[in-house]
Length: 570
Image (cartoon, rainbow, N blue to C red; front, side, top):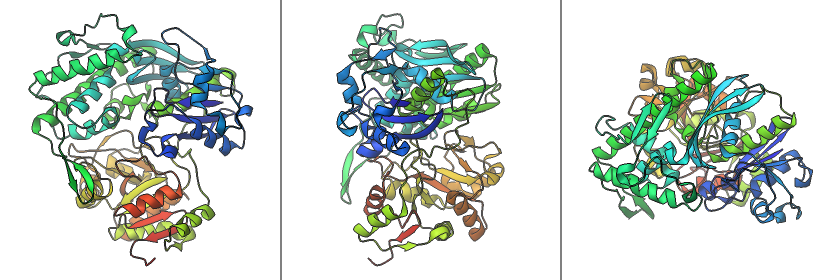
């Protein structure tokens, strides 16, 4: 089964499932090198990779599923639009094979399936929240061994994702692709300064009413959805609402410094306060939705997906909610992850996957490259390198202990926007100057953006106050006193961190952490951020890694068994 995600001209992706197991998944942006693969919904290269991983052709795939309904609002189970199918899967990449039909999985159902089916739970409440998809912006569902049952949905005119997005845009943080920055800025603000009374949390969920700015909640707006007319009206209404608070739209000044265009990253107190208010209000609304889902299902397990599911702070609040014993958040919670959900949902329907399935414990589902391929790339770029073999983690731990920043490229590329030890930048988290250096010089981004820690599971109780695994860096935790003291570069100004925990095993990532602890006498934890700079997707191939390493101030590149240091002569 081949699932295709990202149908709305961003975050295209592909996932291949065989016998109910995820064989491969990748986002198209990693190949096109265009963040979010904006302005295209072609999944062709990602799909070609997935098929190559299994050694099959597109003609051999039993069923292909897309995570949206092209005929919305008219219901449809299949898509036979030859032009659309060719747009998604360029025949030139598949020996000119043209599938005649695609299975339609509604957008929010695909999100829900991406969270529940790989959770390992036999029953759970499922919460999906995003901007919108197929006219829906929030879904409550019940997952059981029989599959998913939708319990309640909120229309696009009640979108929490769009609310959050418009605050970020109003504050000059960027377009919808930059909404995650708001979560970081919120930590610096006062959530009680402003009253955003147009959005009201209430029992069972929330209610949005922008009547004062020209959009009534009971207005019939379905005909304004696909042509984006409603979206444009909504953005104008929100801009007026925030301006009425005394906060005009902020446009960040730009300057030319050191060969690059640098936006002014400063913010005023009212900006941080509006961010904090929006974050707190979002969390209140999500809390009410989660409570409703738990009540309707009568269970104590919660699964989360949808773009809003990437909000670590909100996930941390939901994890601590009374009534939630276990939480699973799909690491590719955004639209790219819909490829996973679409493929798994079709597998369930065909009887190839029996629920509960195996829990998803790793996001390493993308391409890997053998040492020969890596050696060729390093040689072609004229880089001096040493083959450390199995001793590479020990050597890298020594570099980290000396304060060097390391590009870490190992194994299969990870799914989702958070680097999880496959394509990472690593550094010692003991000094906050490390965070500032990476934000400013390496990532070229705002100095107030938080960075995250990766730690061995055995260090978790001391640093994050729990032994519950956190494999995907997607749930915020309150930092312990030990974390504030030992890894302050990963503790945000609000006292939280978003950890990734790693089990002690033969994996090179875990061995690096263990060696770092042995060499420093400090906890087995380092700073981990994605291997890329602000303007590019996470690196995918050895050539991507070498180019990013060469273009910035990273000190060391650990790629496969090879180590490259900038202080080595070429």
